[in-house]
Image (cartoon, rainbow, N blue to C red):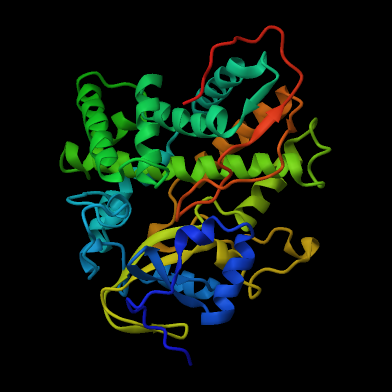
Length: 410
């Protein structure tokens, strides 16, 4: 058995190199062939951790918070000030459901579950369609667009921030913060601080003047002890939703434009779109590497000897392609819902239904309105250790004569 202890001797593959690989599936398979279902990796240069690659092993980590905790106080790593991992893995003084376990997690999770469960889907759909049509109007007369910066990133964040009652200017500011937090350039630590200020100001303003939005529902919920908990919960909800949605939208659009099974379905797209969305959840999960859990005690996972305080990242992309749960037979795979793109266990995604609604409207609005043609098939992946989506997605189409010409890139 190979020595699986992630020592600081170097030579480990970095997460960002896996998500940025030309063929990520092949890179992950090579790693698993070398190490088995749990591999030593670099979370960033010089910061060791584990990438859990096997489907059953990822499920074990997700479900067993008594051994694999979310609270970063269990992590024995001391990050340097300049590390880009602070905002994602060990932010200071965060009080929200993401970084808590057990009863405290359940207390902070309940308001989120109840808010999303009670969402008015008709009103939500109207918000999303309004955002989509406004963004499409901005480039429809031009006959060309770049669908990541001008559409996917904008629609996901403006729609989600709109559900919380933020206006468009606030939404654009929050989007820039979230992009830096998830490693797409800038300083994640200062970006998180800026985002905290924007969200706290909004909580205070909403408390003084409530409206029909998720922020007002959070304010009214008795489980939150103060506005800091509300603001921190909103930050994690908005950031997590944006990163997942932009990736899901981008990957689904690319599939609809390049996969021969979907390229002929521009009209009557509803059934084909559902298929494309589901296949994307399997093959290109919105969060390829889900951060992070911390071992509470020494344990064995797969072939790896995990030490108390080790960090584990859940390789959702690898787990979804584990041959133990997925075959290459499309007919056999019909209806298979055992992918881990939404997680399992106490920290599973609380917004699967509204998330799917938003992605479907975003892709459908674009595909039904414009006859899109991808103008550059070569893909450069947006740099992030956590998610994988095209940095750009340039398209051409027949211009709309009546569309507005106001630029909408954010």
